Image (cartoon, rainbow, N blue to C red; front, top):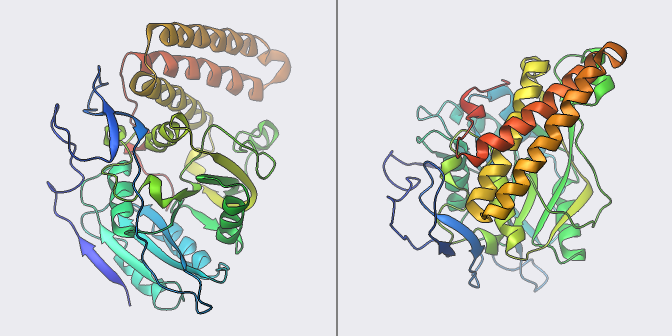
Length: 367
């Protein structure tokens, strides 16, 4: 059976008016917000939560996990993801449910969920968040998850390895981590061109399992329930279509002193559509990354000294980008794209300092 809920616009998910201080479960600093952001949040305040579930059949308490998925106009990707979640290994003593939040007010993903959920052993909860934007959908997913021990995040253009969740949980327990993030491998719709393969543009940095890091991404993450349960709008809705709400969230986690570790064997594969395998998208992505980092700096660690350092960093990246462009006649297209990416990153760093928000996700890639 599939549980389903729909929320009309204007309710939960709307950003409070400037100056309001809804019970967010966070300590709030009121300073100069960047456009559209009415609350500045840098520190978490936790309370002990009662988790859903019961006993594991051996007298021990069940560990409860909600796997949260935000989706919009990707029926093929969502179907593949749900199929892979239905095949994943669930450790003894763990109760798992999947929460799918459809960011289409018309509920276009419902048929996909209905078709897959009936054939898979993991229960699926479906909800609609009609207010368009990634953080709105993620916040709704967290709310629908309820009081659980852990919330895992994965994207609707990915598939998970069978041991994905078990490895995230194992690493979290072994390293007393509050957040665990893992490997995302590219899975191209079509064979990539030679320059894309040679440049490794779609490969992400990896670390040894257990290594403490300073960031995480919701494309592959396990987050302790205490960081999310009962917190209003954990993902900043100022990043409506920017895609940086997870960067903002995990930076707050880091600044609050919580532990983020890497799980190299917790693997998901991300579909790379043809529409992304081009220099224009790669360059825009770096602009967005720089833009997001400076927006987070303004909101979470703002000072004139930090802004000055950020300007210097932008200058350094611009200089290196220029040098890479000069090497293009010798090193070819890879150097050209690398140089342009550096320049775009520098531009993003500077634009973020002015408060400009680049809305990359106003266009949906993939199917």
